[in-house]
Image (cartoon, rainbow, N blue to C red; front, side, top):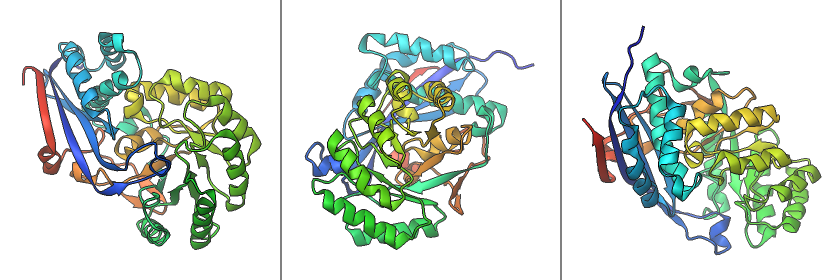
Length: 376
């Protein structure tokens, strides 16, 4: 019988990962955002009286990282003395600790790092990978690459990066669209499809840059390329517009990555706004809300393709009943000692306990601030 355990120490830190080159999607080309040059992370490590520990992270692109860190610092001490096994109870407690600023956005993203750390800890206690702890349906997940298809890259580079991804065992290729000149979008998609041939899975991502009329016209023009999906054709909160588009097109619609709570995703599920739902565990508050949403999505018959953070989402996708996809980004590799493997179009679930990752010395060198609560 396992004796009761208690949280005795929580460490929070923030670090900034610089990107090798500025990254642009359609939001940059339409003037809505500046190129992305770095990613700011919130890292949480939770340690118990029995000496067990777990680590999780959340992140922010372009803005919001300092806000996540500040909010986590205000509520983290409320986890001290609690049983780390009671993750749902702890999530609710911390959520209400900061409820005056809401229960979505920064408020939940700040909790995500702690929530994910608790799942890392609990699955380590069981001696299982997180996927096995949750109840895996598979030991590998279909994977596609996004990092080589951004709009700052000339077409020749996109094609070369696609070849590199396929040679590395990644199964599909996603490229960005949504430029002001839609003819250029079609030219790039046509060239990539011709280069890859008819059998390689190909997706496109408009990053919310079309209005309803443009999305319908582009969706019809893109039908000939046999895409796996068209991602974020409309504003992330336009559930009705996405639903109309999904009914009008043969190509599946994917969306959801920008939403920051289960409640915000409910509109997508209820309106049948997407064929593929794309939640991001750090963005919606961690694994606890992700699992709630996954149950709703499965009940609605939706496919799953979590956004970014493959180090977390590989495990969650492996535990989804329907065959999912996981997004391959090598950007976070410098943060961890371990690497994920891709073979024959699939990403292998590691058999290491928990998430299966340890922070690198480089991650520690990029750390800009740290705070501790409780007894070390």
